[in-house]
Length: 594
Image 1 (cartoon, rainbow, N blue to C red):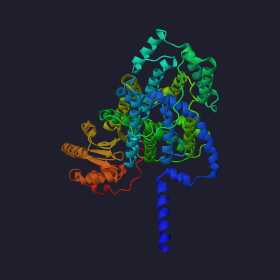
Image 2 (image 1 turned 45 degrees about the vertical axis):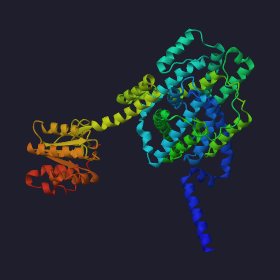
Image 3 (image 1 turned 30 degrees about the horizontal axis):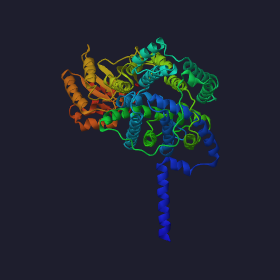
Image 4 (image 1 turned 90 degrees about the vertical axis):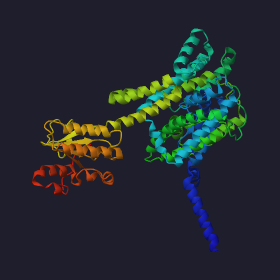
């Protein structure tokens, strides 16, 4: 009996551990009956948005509309199992559509085999899922930070323009074979000029566009996309739009696709892998930003690595059932939250609702006009654009506004995939620029304030004769070691020459071996000119590195002081031979040296 009891306890502990690791099990274990009505309603409301958007974004990606529904179902179920956020909604996304098309169309061809395009997109979904899942296991959630806010704004603005121009021919009832923003714009203008516009298609497309924009502006509680779809289907039926040259969606295949591992050629993998990395970065940046925003409303924090795992599960599930890469949608998540969603059961209900439509009512959307799907995508593209954000950057920090504009031009001129490379490169280069040439200044004493302060902010600040207090606001490493050396050497060459240069070292959070060698050579050079180099407020971990590098054999160990006041007191007492005891001076706090 005792062994059975012990075994039962062990199994209970294993189940509890699994529940903590698998958010879906944790939700099921703690689910309350009172949540079910809200989750049911929210799931049904969500499905009315997922169906038209899923179909529209599938076509944006160059895929059959039905694949958008397969993707919506599987990603909702995958995230419900491993996704940590209770209300986050994943699915086909307008920001990923052009990226998916940019990867698969060069391989499959613009007029290629749809089955091959589906296989490529599914493999792309599996690769994105594998990348994000492996990244989660390696705890690489910080990768989403590779896109700074200014470059993300520029990238999304470029993406919005790309989507808008690409959908205009479809809205006007014709198509073009052009690729790239400029070529597509010229082809659209040429098509309109040649009289290719289908008046009935343009009328129904503009009507759908107007319905969505008006409802989103004045009646936000009304599902604008659903309203536009219903109005468009009614118009197509009442006016016989197909007979007037308007292309309709047609009946969808009945049933559900089997579990399939997509077959692609080995030669296709390099482009697919490269595209998968770009898609993964954009998807993660969007997901973590959206999850943080919604978690912040309830005072919760998110785990970037667990979000990566949830995104990975959603993409892998979609990729195994003829789906394509997915991301989070802030608008769909907001709809679910406003409809009362409490848990990921909302997503499960939405998935079941879409699957029921495919199994029982596959002809429900057969009369939906294609220009209406173009209007859905155009509205989504407008939501991606953030022109006020660019204006704000111009007013607040023009260098970051320049980064945003450069990222925009990267997408608009080079294309979607090169654009993400440009955006990431700009973000990393901006970080490197700040570290290479950080803020640096001289500090002085202000009579009305305690401590030592930036002489640029306080021009009246006084400096002691023979002493320069210098602050360098960055870690010291190979890229900025020369900058630090040149600045200190310039201070030492001033006339009159200072006797001491004290480095306010609190902002210096690291010193690498290159910087260590530089400091040794700099100290020897300064000593030869009769100038002493000292450090104040250096952090203990950095000081330990200094000792490990054996710099204290060159730089006097007594020239490391706990506070600026201690260093300054030592300078004042140097002629009295009190330097050795100055480090122990219990001085006041250093005040404002940010």
